[in-house]
Length: 435
Image (cartoon, rainbow, N blue to C red; front, side):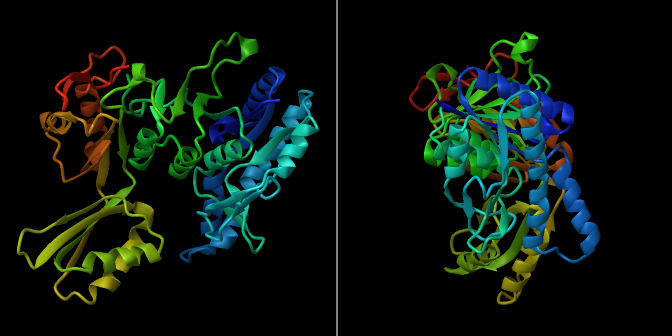
């Protein structure tokens, strides 16, 4: 039979009632003639609670990454066992497996391990025996036999990796929303659900702060060609009169009828800006600085260097996750010891607001439209970066929500809005937000 992989996030399994509801959805899918593999996250805020326990034990000291993985992996094991019990209660044969039992082998980077191989032999064996297989998301095992975790949101990666390894017919990511929107509906009430979005657009939105999918899971999906759907586990079940589920399809190439210049607006308030002033402007300086970040496995978000022709000094600004700020500052201070006169400043009261769309690079006037939206609200732009499909601005954190609303409105991305006409470089008109 064809295989379907379904992933249920923390809100979808936050209580016994929701686990039972998710189990009913799984049972219905199986009744349609599919073999079903279920991937589960920890219940609700379990992961945060476990981290809080570790912090209470360790005080100001940093807990061992290995022991943190041992601790945090327990959350998914609880969910998996309860989901298997719920299915059995419904008369559906089911078995729960840990990431290791399901064949996930990773490197030894605790708390952010990378998948090296997936050998789902046990999963196939259980499916052939007629069982639904419930797999703990977010975890694997390294060469030393130690438990590892795949980083926050890693259950998405587990599901997509299993779909690839099992050559599944479909991969469904169930959350508490019915798809991916043009903006966070909590910030923009009239944000519109997207019918389709490309890997590249979702990658850019995820890296820009949209809390939709773990970034590495989308990268993995693109690499292995796994197209998937984002749906709501809270939508009506078939036995409640539910019809076709609302969803967003994540695909390699968007259907022409859904193409648009700007796909959505994302905001990331969990960033900090670091600026090194009066850095020597000569070959090898940037290499030395960013090699130090690489050795410490710190991901840099945006980088801007300023310096004019013939200048002997330059300023380098970069953004990192707030959680990485302390380590990043230590890295900068160590490197700066060789650069007398260089100054270090940082700012945590910032947010990054981004527009994302496959037509950003091929249409003139997109940047002007974005900057005009901010200017009309009196929102100052403190840093600008861009890529082929995105433009990002750093603004005051207190103005971030207003910035998202202004940009979303200016591009006409909401339900019932008239899209703004943007000129293409080929001379034809295109419409931002056009379905």
